[in-house]
Length: 370
Image (cartoon, rainbow, N blue to C red):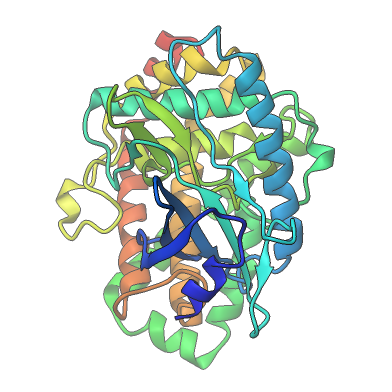
């Protein structure tokens, strides 16, 4: 097994006992590798980086090295001032001292520490869970608030810049295969109509950025529920994982994506569309947690675009899933045909729910005073 061979390239004490698939991520191949000595056991996360998605794996690892090193120093410096133990994965070097290993096929592998005594959920479990998710994201933004964006490579150009996904959609629509998929079902046509109706509005954050109203900062890029680790003992949030997408961006991208993921208790693969709703109680709890730990990360102008960001990022994900479906499922992993179309339908339904609750969401934002 290639994963077992690659696990042994890293500087990990002990003998390799097993390597098993871990999680159900949509991009990288992820494994749990267990090493044992005569008196201890070490569990590490081993990943093969998807070069189709992350075309510059060396730069990606430079980003991860910089971000984790900066955050770890700050965590250590502030550990006496906080009420919990915050964690963040650490890169495990190869036996040659590199941050990655390359296999015979030219694929890039990395090993990182596993977050201790913690777990994550695919869907939000409760209002308390939502608050912890917000707390973790707020703390992450605080940790990187004094890290210059100029030091970070943009490993995914255009990521979370919603208008940049339309060329991919249009290119797929220009092919016979894309047209065939579009016309294969009424569901696909309905998603297409939903996307078209909001196309001009989709540049709202980029327009604000161009006017100088919003500024770039280091962001996580994918702060969904499944990437937030909850402490097994305290039930408090302890870490955010999956740092591939860390890059310069707007904090709105993270806040919007986190709310999108957390406030849909039915989950991203729900089959019953009547259950897909934007939960206002979860929204309020998450934002309270964020405010408590972000240490005033947002400016007054930032706050004016918070409703727009949750609506936009939900719309964007529908667009991305649908464009990938039309293109033949080349980006997001699927387990069955039509899965990306279904994912797009879930996000369109969630976006409609957000739009229907605009006034309530704005009242929550005003009440919390982020």
